[in-house]
Every structure is written in C-alpha cells, then in structure tokens.
Image 1 (cartoon, one colour):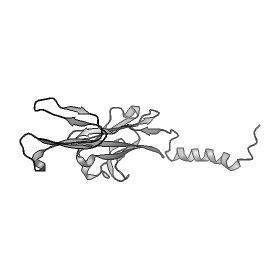
Image 2: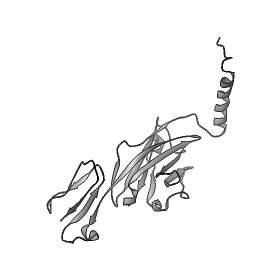
Image 3: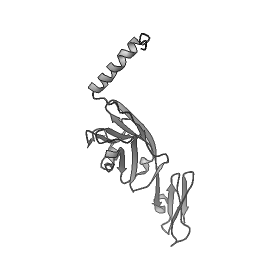
Length: 193
C-alpha cells in the first residue's frame, strides 16, 4: 500500500478541483486548435475562407468560436450558443463575414469573408472555447488584386496595375495571351503598359 502522507493536500485537492470544474460547466475534454500552416491567398473583391479545426476531432456546434484580428475585442466573427453574435463584431465585417457550418459536427469551422478588401490583409486568430477550456491558432490572409491604371494616373490604353501578396505573381506579357500565376516570395507591384 502506498504512503500518501507526502501529498495530503494535493491528493485531496485534485478531485475537488475536478468536481468544481464539472459543476461550473467546465469540460474535461482538452483539445488543441489547428489552422493552416501557409498563408491563405484571396483575390481582392472575392471570398476568403479562414478555417480552423480542433484536435482530436469533436463536435464544435456547442463551442464558442471567435475569429479576431490583433485583439480579442476586434471580432471578425463570433459564434456562441449555436448562433452568430453581432454585438462585438467590427463594423467593417458586418454583412461580409459568415460561418461555414458544413463540418462543425466534425470539429472543423471556417469563416467566409466576402468582398475581400485590402484592409483584410494580415493576421487573424481563431479561438475555440468549451466550458472553461479554450485554445486558439493563428492564420494569415494575403490579399492579391488588380486595379485600373487610370486610378493611379496612367492611361487607359491597355494597362493595369497588379499587386500580389507573397505566394503568387501574375504574369501577362501579350494582349490575348492567357494570364498565369507563378510562385514568388515577396509582395510585387507591376505596371502593364
């Protein structure tokens, strides 16, 4: 028989803490949150999907889910009590951010941002909470886009200004040729005459 005299407080405290956690709505299920390892690239004016998942896989329908920018209070989207919560959402995402619910029961959640803007470029955090336990993961959105040369003082005679975030570069050398995307490690801007 083991001598428990060396840990009388710890041995009695552990079951008590577990009981308190269960009585206050806590969960003994721990998980981690995983996001994409590479930046997500979205085209200016298109849609971006910011996805995260819990590991091990478990139903996320009753979890609090939150996507935010640099601060927890800068909410892009909040899902709590099985519905969207708009009170804390940044005004710039109202009407543009929505939850992709397809795989919530399998622990995967995503927010779709419509009509992607240059200001959407940057870091995001996805946050999952179940009871008192929570985890988060970071992800990066890179915005790529095209604008008319006339918007920047150029002529309208056939050119455009292109800017693409790290990961893709637009190459278009002749009128009528097919554009293609090529990998590149930095942000580039080009003027096509």
